[in-house]
Length: 600
Image (cartoon, rainbow, N blue to C red; front, side):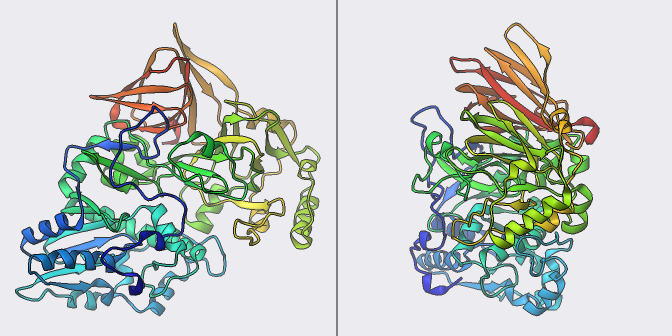
């Protein structure tokens, strides 16, 4: 980090490039019953705030300290703030940077060359090595504490030095990492200077985050304290035991991920108009990342204090409690994604498709692919979804038209090649890999999908620049390596428009099955009820969203928690049974997704 921006009180807004608000210092009581952008889970263990409390705890340990952590940490700020507190107790710490033991940048580039994607602006391949690959073993072993001093070894990978002492870990939410990246204030692992944010994200996704997650999993049982560093002027932290006990409790109760929101070239106004607490000084909101496990966090609360850790920490600690029988297939990878695509008063998404299972494995190293569905939460009259080809599609002609459009900047009459279907509330459109598709304008789409989320091959983007005025990247070649041209004509209506049928029915409730495609490894159902309904998990994780109605109470074991309209929530497999109670004045609808038993 550039030391010129370092001071005792840091202006965080100069160090992050976004209009999204920083997580508040304290959890405030809701003034009204509505969508909560800061959903928390109460834990028994205390959550502390501020550097003074952490410094006092470190001093009380009375021996050497290792502070490991994730990418994107402002280590210089942490050191400066802790040194101020140590000085108040007349203590001078001996700080040792584990980066001294990193291999040279040129060696790291050689190690990662087959994974960084080279000149490809978007894609690399998941690195299958370890964080230790980045370090020189002899140099690590040379990092020794000095006698009669408070020695603190710090940095991502510090625990690899093997010191037998107190271990702290610093976590940074993925959205904040990206905001810091866009401000050019952080670096990738082993790099001395920031790179272009898009290239930096590619490196994060395919190389840095995979090795850091493996490292975190190894450390979790031994961490003595964990620090949430996103509010660099007022950190929050808790003990390792409080963290592990809190996550264990969470694994047997309903919880929500902390959503985050982003504008986009096609973005709309539904989110701005219906979700309070967000910064309205943005052109639009295109996405709400309701549940994209690799990039969402979970907020723990004690008193009014909040601490965020990455959602995947839950799976790294005990994936079977969360996923149940699906853990045998997916391990630490949460399989299902829920997110919003808002095109109300916006534009069409780019025309796109997603890779086949074989293609995503061979080219990008992912174990499963980006099979999607569009659940229509809301829509204006006349809204459409583009899905599947016209019966008369000619592959070569279509490709020629797209390439000519890209080269000559000429519009394409997409409806000559791709079918459109009216979109109304509670429709479900099926988008298995290889299917040409996009949402039209004036939809609020709840994407219920497999977790992979960046593998979109755009073929046509309506001649739009991005929000910075630059041309958007198209992937016509990759798209045509994956498009399924048999999904055309009546086949689309028969196989890609979900059929909704009643599974079970009671005096004031009904369970609806929403058919999915054989390519989908997940099933989708919908609860509709006036008073309440009880469901068994059958050793599966359920992901749900309140898609109609005001609010419900969710009862899992000894806890009752409230869910509001449009909120996504997770029921871990370990819950076994849960009850949904209607707390509003009208009938409610709750959509549910889970891994099919035959796909576990």
